[in-house]
Length: 124
Image (cartoon, rainbow, N blue to C red; front, side, top):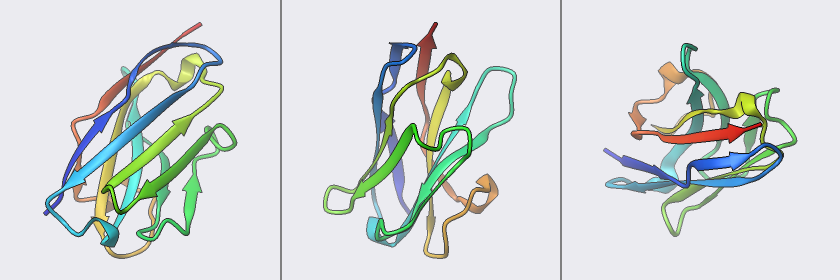
């Protein structure tokens, strides 16, 4: 079983950048698919991006494609979410999630393990 802790959220102006981190413990991290999801106030949780266990395959939601990059360092048991050109509509709580093995997925039900989330607020 893996535990996930997100960090790096905060308040940033529109057009700015943030890098979120998702630190894992308690499992063989290199065997897990990791995804990022977000939930804005009053809205359903939505998929942002996901990365394969080796880091060789990534997939992005259309809403963030070209502005967001997911990466991982399995030696450090950490996945990163680099977000650039932030917009007010990116304001949300960002969650990382993990699933053991399998393929990448954009569906939150496919992920068993979740972090507590980190708040990202983009001011316009």
